[in-house]
Image (tube, rainbow, N blue to C red; front, side, top):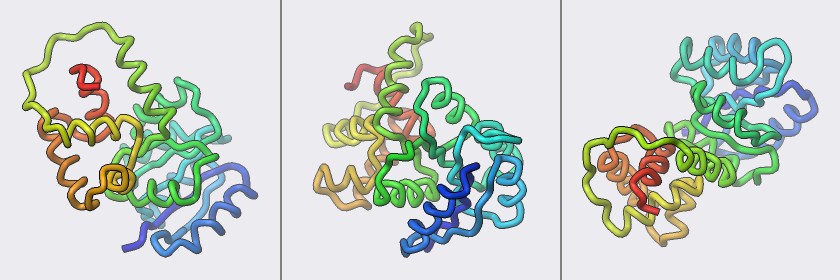
Length: 213
């Protein structure tokens, strides 16, 4: 199954170059391009992409506002932020708005394709520097009322959650731990269940709160 992608960026040359790069990938089908967030929202309604590859700083409607609208109006479209900036406020605003991932434009083509495939599956995909910012932000938060205790993680699950916190995809975790990708998927599902969270980003943050790494 291919991933239907809408490229959203206000720089025409970058959009065209990125489309050319992605169209040769068998896993990717570039269904359209948008020059701003308003156009992205409209085209998502028409083209129904699996993933909107979203720049953040654009005219008319920026990527963060467009992401929030897509989450409200077209929740089936996953938004993967792709930007030049990793400012703390941009990162947290994009994730709060509903982006499933955050990558920088210096990402490799291989990593980008893996991220798009992962985003289609609903997985969180974070640049390692962005994952580090999230963990650091949690470390600075005041202590909250303790949550219910969680089921202890196995040694292998602890290895997986530490790699999740580094922003690794299932494929990258599988390579690092010498496991089948399906085994990693099952381990991630188990981690989410034991930590009582919905997604990979929350799993990393919850593990940090619990002092697991």
